[in-house]
Amino acid sequence: MRSKTAHEPETSWEIRKHTVWKRLWSLNIKLKLKHFLWRCLQNALPANETLFKRIGKGSNICSCCGDNAETIEHMLFFCPTAKVVWKLAPVKWDGIAELQGNFWNWWVAVMQSAKEAHGLDRIQLTVSILWQVWKARNKMTFQAERGNAKLIVDKAHSEWLEYEACNETNGRPATPAEENGQSQQKWEPPKEGVIRIHTDAALSAKMVRTGLGIIARNWRGKIVKAKGIVTRRRGVPAIEEAMAIRSALEMAKNAGWTTIEVQSDCKCVVSLINSSNRQDCKLQTILDDIEDLKKNFDCCVFLFIPRTANTCSHALAQFVVKSVRIIEWEGSFPSWLSELARKDMGVVTPFCN
Ligand SMILES: [Zn+2]
Image 1 (cartoon, rainbow, N blue to C red):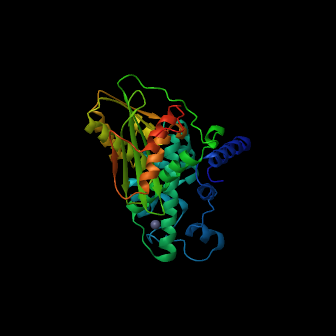
Image 2 (image 1 turned 90 degrees about the horizontal axis):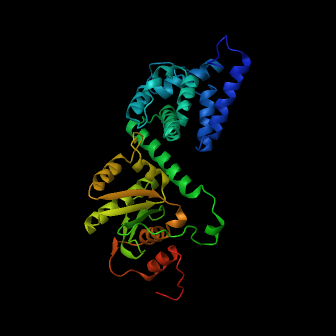
Image 3 (image 1 turned 120 degrees about the vertical axis):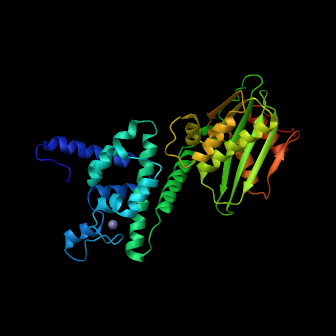
């Protein structure tokens, strides 16, 4: 093994190796990415230098730059395109740059950040970048298609965001109450005078559309405003969720409300809004807008709520994604929405419109 030194007792090395594998397999990333990392760590990725050493045929020179022996480290960190990728990447590992000459050591150092705030996010995004660098290298090697560093970073970032958002909404097993179609959480009224706004996003890959649902209720639970925004684009879940929150603030600002509470079932976006550390974020511009809009209110808080407590805006987003225009309601609301809002509050009125 590459990073073993002559002085280390076998047992301690074995234990550390075991820990590295254990942590790798427990990461919340796609299986194919775990396999990819495993091969990097075993020096088993078929880089030209590795193949050349193993079978003694072909060239060990990097087909992307034509300048250096293509080791795993050269390919992932030192080849000119890879260098630009890491420069543009929204995740920085400058403190451990000197370890890049040995992938194993570098990875062990990366994994040490797991316990820090957003550490796992940083690690997952990093793996996504490594994977895209490898894919771009293969395109160059086998199809002579030169990769663009900016596109590689964007691809890695959006794949990570998509995986995160999907995991958040689909990864959680349904509770018995959810399976019965019941709302699990009881409506807890906000303080008097507070406007509570629920937001959600719906994506339709088939129709290449995204829908944002925003519904505002007063402290008694009465709907005061609702809006559905449809856009023709193939959205990235977390970005759409953040856009729904931004639109909610714009709506609140235009309505002249001063004390608001915004609730979303997208945990990663809510925690990013509430966090001061947002360095790894493709949502940066949207988060900056949200930060600016916040200044229009005396009080403006952002809360994560489970999906079961967000049925109104969920239904609204699902409704609008199938429509062709932006819809706004004020004063009177569609009966299905009013009914959902009542159910949400635990009021069952089956015959009421
Ligand atoms: Zn190269």
